[in-house]
Image 1 (cartoon, rainbow, N blue to C red):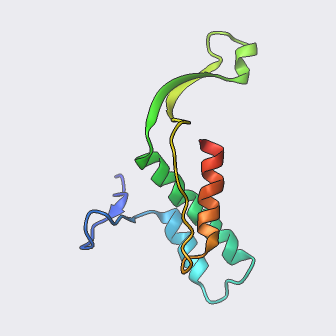
Image 2 (spheres, rainbow, N blue to C red; image 1 turned 30 degrees about the vertical axis):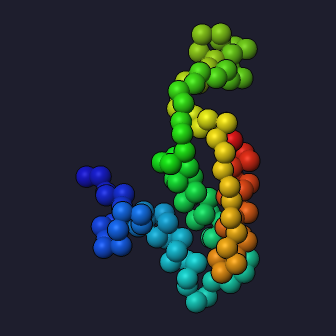
Length: 116
């Protein structure tokens, strides 16, 4: 049976609480009293990578594209990937909030540079 991906709550439609074992495990390790640097930063980085990738996948515009791969040299017919991809013309702005720290914004900025 598939697990629900979000937990129901009373915060309204603009809030999403994910029901995800991977993220819950990271959060448990991140908040554990014996977790110290540099491990804190590693757990935080992995959590933000996952959360931002999920947000991009759900909120950014996608376009069905057929793109050549390196396998094209071997087989002209199957050397392509056809998938819904992020449109590289998408504009995005990263904002660093003083209370939240620069680190989450930096992760988002770097990720956007890779995928857009």
